[in-house]
Image (cartoon, rainbow over all chains, first blue to last red):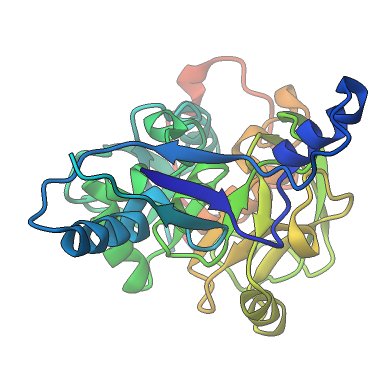
Length: 78
Length: 242
């Protein structure tokens, strides 16, 4: 899974809007809401390191815009 | 200068006809170029129009960047050819890294469709050569992702190297440093969120955009463009070059 998130320090108006609605719903203990994207995909690779490296280049080329987004790659063997 | 303009159309572009209309009305010739084309043909300038190229899937401009025509656009831009990205076209130019920074969701999370006033900052670009620094132009905006951002180093460069072409007088979307349009250091690649092509005819509310599109065509931007009664009259009859 590739998680694409707005980089720290860059405004996330969607997260801020969700967070501002929380006190009214009684979730006063929740803070730091950030909205991102989760992209699930399968990679055919000989090992985890290769899969991670291929995904990192894919993120750089397409899945994320490094100007405003960070990625976190989580791999699960199938 | 430029008189034949290639207007690149991606699946999901929707402002190409406004651009073609404006070019014709200002005495230029417009040629539609499909995104799947590997070449631009014989054009003097290129416009990437507004819309939702490839559905804006993933991020606006993210997929469009990989359309075959973008390689030709990049080459044309690097060789000094005039390239202008309007709205979604601006987003495509940043994604293609022909211009720095990126455009994120408007700070108010609203789609904005209204007139804005922008101030000209730089006049030696292919789009603003018909204006004076400090001129104020009224142009419509029509976007959800128009909030320009760039890292501190890029911002410093934009401001110090005169790469800010237009600034909002009353920032509508949260863009850093009120940026409405930027250019590359050479001034031949310009991206802007407002739509100058929709402000080229008094019928649609104003003609300030004609000063920008007219400059791109290399024509003397007329002070007042006569309102046209039929589209037949938009066929270019004379081509004025500067």
